[in-house]
Image (cartoon, helix red, strand yellow):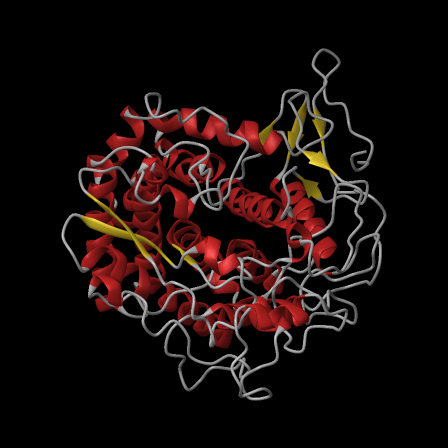
Length: 502
């Protein structure tokens, strides 16, 4: 059952044009107003709990310590740093690059809404990622490192990252073998990050854009999915296979290089390669594997604000995607839970809610700057509607839901206590200095006790399609946090810090 909306106003007798004046989804459930600044601070703090490598002295989550210090040694390269993707101890390059792109995009679009200390913290989180991503593309010519750690072995253990003795296998792709998806997303991440740092660290910004161009050249010259390489497939699949094709990452990478450099060659690339690379395929998806909806929103900026009408097809797809969020429109619709949460099957559902909410706010801003609205057939949707719909998603995640539960750990009075996360669920090194071996952690995994270390700011996978959430460490589809759930949520929360009542 989808959410309910208010009555519409008919404009003309011949064509039913309806304007959505207010967002009125299901009645507000749970607590009232939220402290978006507190939630923003915690959403950024989460990334400290995912750090790999030598941790800095300013580390605020003090239950974490150094880990992964030998990463890359088997290749005689330095691959320390970066982020573990979720509740395990693996560094998957594909979702890490997407996480970085979204953190940077959030700063680009909503950095002005962030309190200065949180903007600084967001840039620190981005820098931790880009320092690692630079290592993956700059150390050896014609090679990109795509992963560190054997996930099969790692997933058979339940141990702290500080204790891990599992194989730190390095997965790399050498030209001419394909890696358009990871290299294209890495290009996007570095290009977007170069914009985020441009005013704060011009030297680092220049390094990022130079390597973004290099990464894109690798992606475009060696076309294909990285998971099709037989030497790495068993390591990256089924966890982060390229399920939806590599073509979208080529367009996505080129679009970010266009945004970051302004160069016409990248505009031509996305204009003339759009159809052959499937720009109009599967346009209602956005996440670590499928970039189409985000690509279309990103490119639409040039159409909406710059009258770049030869890119109009991207805006048409972005419009179509936004219309799919409106239950009363004539287009096909994205599903909502009875409580009003955007829902897509497959587990870890809040990744869809946070990414789509981010796109709603970005697109609303693009439309509002030029006083435009969205035509959804028989319905006209305003930027205000998109923002109010986005607020409903945020408030649901923070506690206004049928469970009365915040899905952000450490925010509010009630939040998940048994998240699927090794570092959080095992006693810290400070509290338990003795090593906890691979299988010795099972007693903590199976324990009914709350996790001893609060992974502040972590947004879990979230409830099922019926709004029901069981606080169960074993059910990773619901209880596991990921970096790519949190990354878009940082930008979203920044917007609502400055605009709590859109």
